[in-house]
Amino acid sequence: MTLPNLLIVGAAKSGTTSLHNYLNQHPDIFMCKPKEPHFLISKEIGINRIPNAINKKRQYIDLFKSAKNKKYVGESSVLYLAYPNISIKNIKKHLNDQVKIIIMLRNPVQRAYSGYQHVKRYNSVENLSFDQALKKSEFRYSNNSAITPASRYLELGNYYKQVKLFKQKFEFVHVIIYDDYLNHFNIEMEKVFDFLNLDKVHINTQTKHMVGGWEWNNLLFKKLLLENSILKKIFKNLIPKKRYRKYLRDFILNMTTRSIQEMDPQTENWLKNYYKDDIIKLSKLINRNLNHWIS
Image 1: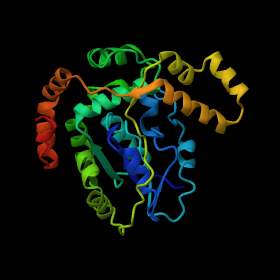
Image 2: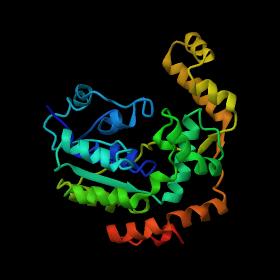
Image 3: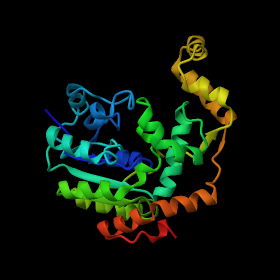
């Protein structure tokens, strides 16, 4: 039985998808598909909140059965970081305390806006403005058992306590700052391979992962493409071949989407003040100057 000994635990919207796929290029690493099984928190958080999560251990084990003779077997469920008490308990229960943990952190102000845009893009329920969603995110989450944890736009960026708990409970924790990952990719990948005690390999970065930067400008087509509506079923019956449906879907997306507008400066300043104390404590915890996140 093969189980993970490498976890990318978050944060959401911080480059974890690309790192997951780049690590898969290393001959000594197997990263599972789907990338985010969320098995280690799914029962406690609720399958309604994470409908694509795996909640049976046998299914979880099956994700890694193709990992033959690999030094590292991993997965990248980004909500583990947001629920440290639950995930840490279950990592120790189902895996062990020698698991290697990678944490990727993005400026929480930018992460919140990116997270909102992602949920708005792929979840038909999100219909509030960013300002409204920030104010109501925790109330909505507490009062609706089907609301995705990804909509906790503020809370997911309170990194200090999350990172502190992982560093306290595990010996092997490596933190990557998203800015460094973008601007000094080769150096950051070398640090990852050093952390894993692996030989360095060339990483092909031609394929882009989880490319965002767009939003809907036609809510009718958003509902058509996202919800399991009668129109969507008719659409599938009329065009049975998945390949042709994808061509048409991409055409519709090009016609009904637009580039994301920049965050309102007042909202950005409010978020900087909100996260300021947490960022200062995080900076000391990981010994990394993060003043550029709040300046």
